[in-house]
Image 1 (cartoon, helix red, strand yellow):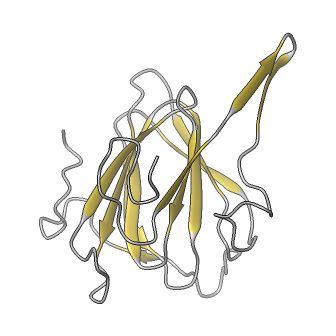
Image 2 (image 1 turned 60 degrees about the horizontal axis):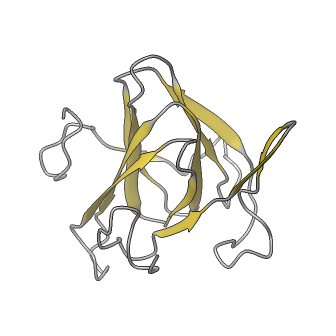
Image 3 (image 1 turned 30 degrees about the horizontal axis):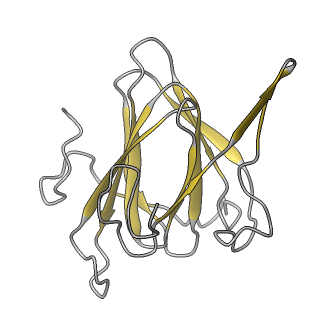
Length: 160
């Protein structure tokens, strides 16, 4: 996969990276390395957390000014949307869409300033995203800037 293409062959927003993940099965179960300190995609460690969305629920839009996110879908299926609102970006105005699931695992690196969110796309259960951000969450001054998921100025339709 070219570093400028997503899993669907789409042109990626500047700074977005996709790392295919390898699942190693044996008679006991499976192992999957997600992010290593010696990976080219790795920058720094802030914390690890998981977030879920119930079927059909949208958790969007938001962006960060300080942190990069690294998402992996651990359970269910997630429809991930990205929007580049950065005025100086060469991909300003571009959207990306990714379908994430444990059956086709990859790590999605989301750069600073890119709006992102996801929809629980598994009809039968919650979808779970694990995030490894580069900065720990600051409870007194969160680095999270929210936006209405259905704002028509962002060319991404969560309803379909």
